[in-house]
Image (cartoon, rainbow, N blue to C red; front, side, top):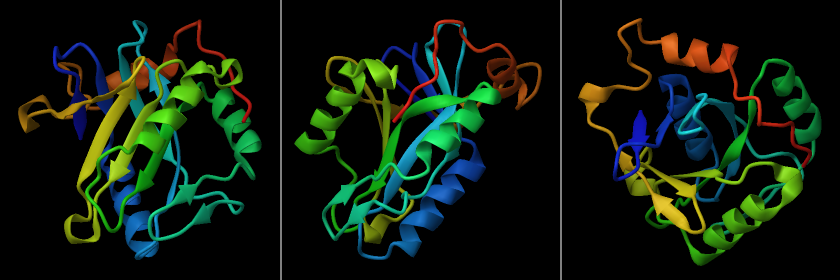
Length: 187
């Protein structure tokens, strides 16, 4: 699954395995919100993000039918291991089991806080929201750039990570050559 901004210059790619895990975790949470963090890498120009892994909710998370507060238990160690593989914190995801997957004012404020927190080292975090129970699997993607910007689902003809060198070449290139200005974060 690939998401694009309106000029097509910024992309967020989700491999099928990540999409499947998002849907599974959302179904398992039933009528409660759930969520976690996004881990992956960027291209050299910092215009494309590849989400290679998501987490479920840390044990100290709090969730209800219309709220989710992501905890932090275990994330420092997880991100340290990811860093050794040149993977980075890219943003957040959560579900909206009873409503459409549109970002709320709380979501926008949280992403603003993450973008402006120096220790996060993620000035343009990605936010994924997984859809309501009646449309489970519907995913909406946002990037925070002074405000939340909704990205559009790319046409299937642009498939995720598709290049002339093969479907996984972009992912390998991003993983093997991360931008030098991205630093490890501590949550």
